[in-house]
Image 1: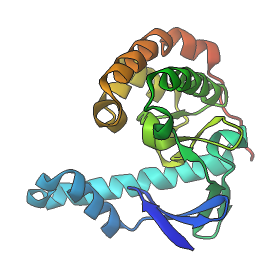
Image 2 (image 1 turned 60 degrees about the vertical axis):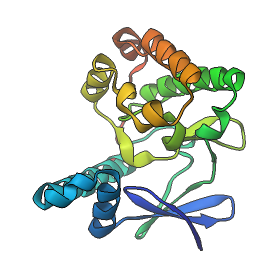
Image 3 (image 1 turned 120 degrees about the horizontal axis):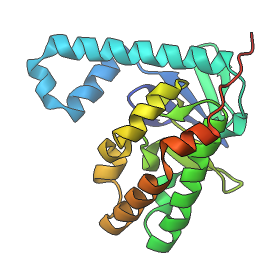
Image 4 (image 1 turned 120 degrees about the vertical axis):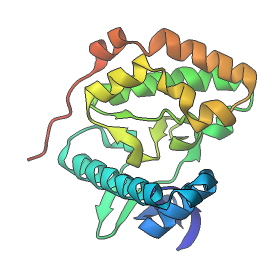
Length: 207
């Protein structure tokens, strides 16, 4: 299989119309953190703590995904195998956010997608819309980066109150100013505690 990417938590390989993801090692995680935050070179103990935290959170999320029941298309039809995870190959949402008119449509769809996730009892934690989400062959938005989700409503409440999307890489670095302003306006208007209470449903466990 051809390697096509590596994030903080997973290595990604091409497999036809699918991708295969394998967990990154602690060493790979540290390298990525150093790339993003070179000052960790002076704080190696803190770097170790962060790497362990990321691994523990990844394991917790993977266990929760496997014990919960929700609409599989939302996470691009995950299939768990020994030491790897298969997922539908999709087009990153970033590619649809370059033209202002198209971006407006996709931002509205993205927020509706967030509500669909809430109805299934989970939510993305960081709201990195450009890199954590994609568009499948049916033109539906799906979540590619399943390592950054939570099943705790309290986490989502906190994210709404702190406007967590404003701290994401996508918001700060990955979208043009006019699109960023529109996105922020719509998130403020629609990502509310009232809408969370309206849409949130606990995902039932399989066993």
